[in-house]
Amino acid sequence: MNEREEQLLNGHSQRVELEYETALRPRTLGEFVGQLKVVENLSVFIAAARGRNEPLDHILFSGMPGLGKTTLANLVSHEMGVGMHATSGPALERAGDLVSLLTNLGRGDVLFIDEIHRMPKAVEEYLYSAMEDWHIDIMLDSGPAARSVRVSLQHFTLIGATTREGLLSAPFRARFGVLERLDPYPVEDLQTIVTRSAKLLGVPIEPAATALVAQRSRGTPRVANRILKRLRDVAQVKGDGRVDVPVAERGLAMLGIDRIGLTELDRRILRCLAGSSIAVGLKTVAVAVGEEEDTIEDTYEPHLIREGLIQKTPRGRVITELGKAALK
Ligand code: ADP
View (tube, helix red, strand yellow):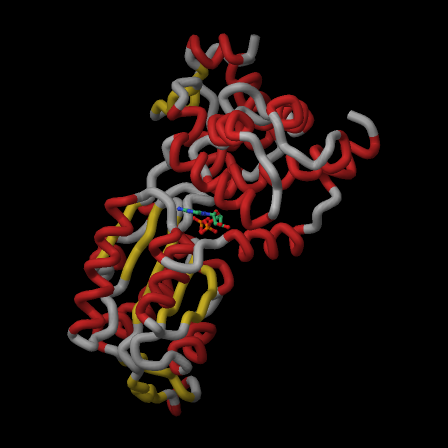
């Protein structure tokens, strides 16, 4: 890879990535591609709540990163015509962090908590009374003078997003009226998403190149959009601005993405497992490939498992024959 190509791949700051992501987000539920069952369910619940003039029940979205959980939370608040306040599990360190958020919510407003499984237990328990009885108890003073004051809240809708539904406690899960799981998208849906994004970004792209991007996006719209953006750069610098099959092939090779959507990090994981005759623990894999355990478990492993390249056993991860073949 020459210097210019390297710049192309790394030169985009996170801020720019975020702006792109916002620009490409569907604005209405009708624009949201695929996940038909989820969209249909949400449409019914929204219509019913609106018909009764009531706030929507609490919703939990689960699924891999980049499948559209944040997008759906935005769309729900948009369709309900209510305000949206967003935060994330790790940002809520203490119960006190929740107080100002909760007391600022208007009737029906959405409080969106991303990565809700990473919220500390004490904060989670503090949410229970807010979700169920619309009040919170705030402790004033400490020691013998300590007393608690009950503050009532507006009826709001909590929307949680999680990549690990299994990590949520049973009492917490039980407080969500709607639980929706997002699955990886079929290639046809990803093609529709890439076509839509290309139009929004003003990138001319051939249908065969669209198909190539869709096939290599590991079922994930965020990955598809990211690849498209890089291909736009390649087309601009190396071609005539048009993304055709040669440009797509060249860009995918620059990104180190292979035929089945594997990246260099996937291959490192496979090589780490191939080098061991026994099952390998997540910690060891993380150290060997230089990535965080959570990221490996949330982002990389699901695709490797779905493609049948690795297996998770109680003792750790093992590579399959298919996985070994993918390394050749
Ligand atoms: P998550 O919250 O699950 O990590 P996001 O909602 O942030 O995922 O989606 C990532 C990006 O993928 C967004 O910018 C959005 O444009 C795109 N996207 C996700 N799902 C869809 C969809 N069904 N249709 C169109 N674009 C989508």
